[in-house]
Image (cartoon, rainbow over all chains, first blue to last red; front, side, top):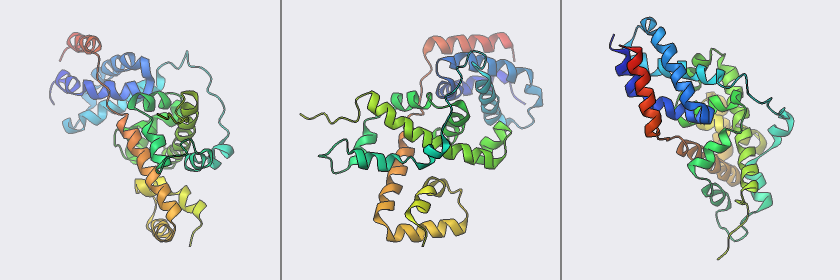
Length: 185
Length: 76
């Protein structure tokens, strides 16, 4: 087995990037916490090739714990209402850019990477974590299930609800930030 | 043929390859005949792209310095 520092040093940019998307401004603390925990249990890692995924798994659990004591109580989610929400239909119905030939794509074009990350941070962590890991970092749902020590069905259900919440937050964010009004020359 | 509601409900799972073969065939059959659901599929693909585009975050130099410092203090 190689040097812990070599493994961790190589992975620092990736770990920070994931943490930033999972816990925003608490990212540095989460990575520090991850480094300490990983260092203490490094002797349990049997396969050097599994090192990067092992570090991410530890980080994800640090992020789940991050800010737990000071976290605000999440707003209750009305799942029935959420299930019936469709961003595609909402955009078509509200028609924010009446002169557009590609209404839906124009709507999405208004969001930059910073906006996407800000919207993700508005979602409850329960749904944010699988969304980030699957759609931003390319992990399979079954790999996320292993990381979270949760059944695959649970992760798939959280992904489904997380996507719906993300769509709904996209619309609310667009309304709050003037992205649903056409800027005409 | 499945309804638009049923097809749309499965679009993300369809894109994620987490539907079984039978459901995939049903969605395929629906998409072959429904332009509106094809547009919704395209929108779901763009949404996934928008999410993926938010992935890259640079580590601020001062943060990177502190993280390296922690590693040095931890030892090999």
